[in-house]
Length: 413
Image (cartoon, rainbow, N blue to C red; front, top):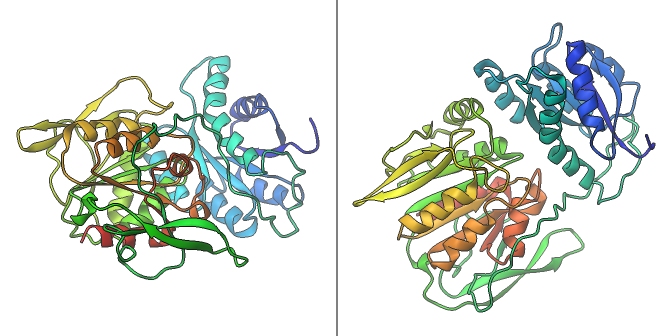
């Protein structure tokens, strides 16, 4: 294996599973497994002596478990990306959600297949997009792993390459407003009526330079939104915690959230968000009324959409094919809202891999009643989903994560 490969350590207390994870990881181009450990204590000792880029870390281990090990790694070796490897259980789901809020880059579930080759194939499918993103953080070029006793390098943000159809000729879209370091809790003056800002370049300090320009009148943002939609993926649990914490609990409109996660894990995420944010976040069930003030999270492994029933909007859960490789998918929810909801909509796209949500935003924009906010490049764990929306010309505001909640609250007043 070339010396400039992505260096991986596998940490698992089961010999068989260490072998399965190693073979799965090394089946991905540019990846090399350089060492193993049977528990967190052994792993930390080895990390002090060898160069590693990524740790694939089991959740349940003797002596030192995955969560405790993660805390040590993020403190001592912040340049190392940690991907949790978890069994599918309610207990593990609770721990994984805590790990994602404590600095883990992402997680994969241990395959349920009894056949080793089938387990390896399932794990490769889960690991490939994650490890590919970590490779892409090197600007598309592999470079040697950095010795762990030196300061962590500054790696360029992810540049996911996604083929997405452009906005059609003659379609009207609003231009992005970039929010970086501003303290106002409200949208920039005139954003709903006459003026928006366009990013024109980076100053020497790294701050975004803005330039006002006119915009046509008739925006639905003469009125506040009647529905808030949020889509997120990699980095999403921590981002959702921060965003919802910045939005008053007495929000007078319903909120629908799609976070890419498998079954069981969204139950734990909803509970964690409820504890942490002041909002009563519930995992959506089939045929619930989407009432003002309620916050629904799409259940893992199922699509969430909505339907109109008289004057009411109701939830619909279904097990249709994956969309953009995802179930639940942001596009499925957004497209159903486009067909069922006639009032102003605020759509938010947070950190995540791929392009899910872009076509949904495009559909909502075509019917002319949606304002879209994307998470800023600098504050994303993975600048994939927001980037595609921006490059399609569909983002009305690019907002840093630490200001997102306040910005949304300002729009909803």
